[in-house]
Length: 155
Image (cartoon, rainbow, N blue to C red):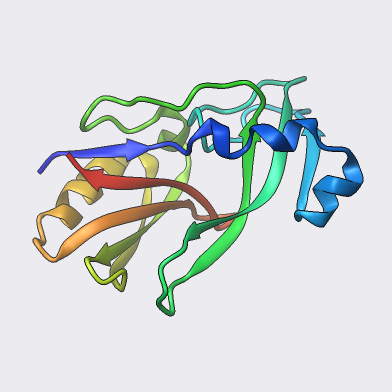
């Protein structure tokens, strides 16, 4: 079974980088300068931000479905980056060294499975999840902080 990991769209976050601190606070967001790397994974580029880069930490609704699984959480977005375009079957390097939580959803946006795996085992876990024809998509989360990392679709 083939899959594709999908980063978020940069245009959804560009305005945050033009806002002052008060405007950001009203939108549950903050600008930050990265002081250590790795540790600040961008959800648009699917790459860790480098020391000195400006990022926005924003509350993002990654699961907008009208089900009990509707959810939002904090994510980092780097300034001025392009959306990642990973090859089919490719796991982003930023996930390989982290513990990843998989949340597996059906066509009704209901969670049907969940697991936690080391990033080095992520590809196999995704393939296994999509072996179930009832599975529509997956959400990946960085397991320790619990933050949304990326969505995965069938390809």
